[in-house]
Image (cartoon, rainbow, N blue to C red; front, side, top):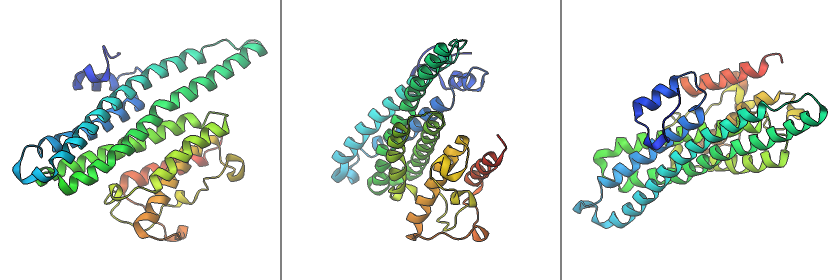
Length: 282
């Protein structure tokens, strides 16, 4: 089952039916984009329920500006989801290239590397769009109509989910890319950005000041850590938790493994799955 049109023109029920089908697209990339777009849409709704009301007249101009930026972001996020699906099709075709001779094998390898780089761009752009939109949630929480505060909070959670999902999708591609400088450039944007996040992360883990043992995995190179390339996405997710924990607590020290506990069910499960996967024989 395939989508008849774009993500933006497809009814929700049809999109979900297609997402649940055996067809590989739409997949995680599109789902991340739709999730983020919902977050941006909720912030736009809060703006619309603030604009035009006398009690918010002093901030109306600012809220209008936020609204316009959220609407732009929403459209861009859906477009990135469409682009993600298009690039996936290209990757599938590249993997079908012949490899019977050394020349064919080398041509196929080079084409795969180019396709993987292209495939990392849409989720990377989605990551940046989420990152740029999240501060609007922080601001609307302060100046928006308080009767729809819960919508601001849900919008923030959806944007964070989109951001983390986009980062995971980037990492899945980087794990198979040989160009170390290309990978480094992407990670030098994502990791510091997450580590420097402000109030958008408050409440996402209940302010727990402890860290799961998987977070003690080094974020160094595959050779230095002795971990397989399949662990890379989990190492960088672990790095996010480390950065976030240090921000919440203001501490640069880590507790030992024996003292470490989970953040909460969902995130802890993800990290444990990562730890188990990294320990599997290859």
